[in-house]
Image 1 (cartoon, rainbow, N blue to C red):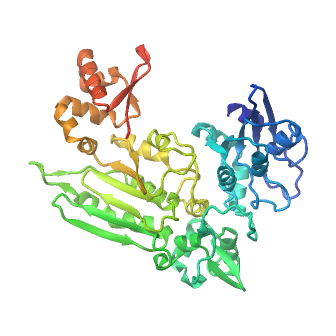
Image 2: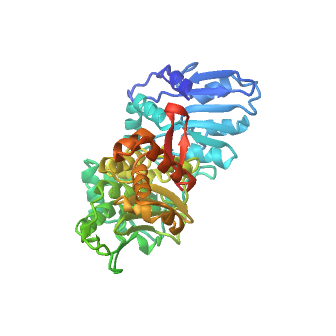
Image 3: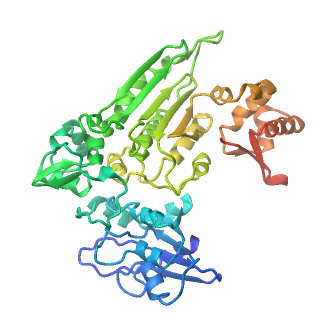
Amino acid sequence: MERAIEVMRESVDEPRDDGKPQPKVGAVLYKPDGKIDTACRGELRDGDHAEFTLMERKNRHNKLDGSILLTTLEPCAQGARSTTKMSCAERIVVTRIKEVWIGIEDPDPKIDRKGIKWLQDHGVEVHMFDPDLQETIRQQNKGFIDGALERAAAAKKETPTEVVLSELEKPIAPAHIQDLSTEALEQYRKLAKIEEAVGSNEFNRRLLQQGLLKEQDGDFIPTGFGLLLFGKEPRMLMPQAGLLATIHYPDDTEETRNFEMAAVLIPAQVESWLRDKLPSVIDRERMQRREVPPLPFAMVREAVINALIHRNYDIREAKCQLVVTPNTIIVKSPGPPLKPISLEQLQSFRAPTLSRNPRMHYVFVRMGLAEERGLGMKSLKQGAEQAGLPLPKYVFEDPYLVLTLYRNAEGVTEELTPEILKKLNEDEKATWQFLVSRESITSPEVMKHFGFDEKKAQRILRKLMDEKLIQRIGKGPATRYEVIRQ
C-alpha cells in the first residue's frame, strides 16, 4: 500500500486545455513469485490509467493468475466512463487476478463504488487501504476530488452492462418533479451555495447530472434517491424511507415520533425534537434524583445521518430507528456492514471509508451535514473520549447494524449478564466502566486513575480477563489491555 502511494506521486499530468486537475494514481502488482511491478497514471502515455499500464503495457503476455493488485484509486467499471473501451475492472477480471486492494473510491458520484461492485460481482476479493493511507491519498488528490465532486459528471444512457449499485438510481413511477419538497430543495441550494434558482432549468439539470432526476419524454422524474432526499412524502412510494424514533422514560412511559419528511430535513427535525427531551430522561429509580449527563449532540446527529446515508434501502421491510433510554442512545440502520468493511473494523474504529449510497452521501456532504468520506468513525470516537464516556459500540442484529452511544458509564455495566454482574465487586465494575471509555489501557494507567497499588490493579485486570471482558495485548512493559467488543 505504501509503495503504491510512492508510485502515485510520480503520476504524469496529460496536457489539457481546460486545466482540470487530474488524478494521481499508483498501482502495484504483487506476483506469486514475489516479484513486483509498478505503474503510475500517464507513465508511458498521456492519460493511460495506472492499472491499464500495469496489465496491458507491462504484462500483456504474462499470466497474472494468483497475483495481487494494489491501486490507490478505484478501478473504472464498464459503463462508468466509456462504453467503447474495456474498463480497468474488466481487465482485472479477464487477467484472473482474484485479490485487489483499493485506496479510495473514485470521488465522482456517477462512478463511485461501481468499479468495486463490478469486481465483487465477478468473484474478486476486494480490500480497502488503511484509513491513514486513505487520508494521504485524498490529500495528494484534493484538487481532483474537489473538481470531480463539483462536476458531478454528465448523465449517461444506461446500457445492459452498466453497473447499478441500487434500483433507486432509476426513476420512481408514478413520481413527478412536483413531488419534491421546495423547502428541502431550498435548504440544499442554500447550504451547498448553489447559485441556480430552485425550479430553474439549470437547477434541474444539476439534479439530473447527480442522478437524482431522470428525463423521460421531456419531463423530469425523480429517481429513488431523489425522492428519498427531497420528496415531500417519500414513504408514500418508498415505505422504507424515514426514521422511527422512540424515547423510553424511567417511569416506563414512552414517546414516539415518525420522521417521514425528505431525508435532508430529518437531522434538524430530530435535533429540534430531542433538544428539550434528553434532559428529561431522568433516572428516578435511585434514591437521589439524578439527571443523566448530556451526550454531545454532534454524536447523535452524526449517527442519525450515517444511518440515513449508509443503510441498505433494498430492505424494504425495515426502517432506520432511533431509541433513547436513560443510559443509551441506539441507532439502527438496516443492512450489514458494506463489504469489504467488516464488523470487527467498525468495532475497533479502524474501518476504511466506503459509502453504500454515494449519490445520497454527495448531497449531505455538499450541505455540510456529513464528512467528505466515510462513516464518521473518528468523530464518534473522539466525541466519546472528550466527554469521558464509554466508546460507542457496533453490533449486527439481523437485519440491523446497531450503534449504541452511551450517555453515562452505567450503560455499559447494565449490558453485562446477571451472572457476570454477580461476580464483580464495585472496584471491578468501576474499572470496567473506565476501560470501555478507551481503545486500550495499561496497568499503570489503572493504578493512577483509581489510586490502586500494582497488586490490586493486576488482580482486577485478571478478573476482567477471566470473565472474557478484556484481553491482554503484548508482553512486558508494552502490555496493554483491550476491551473485547461483542
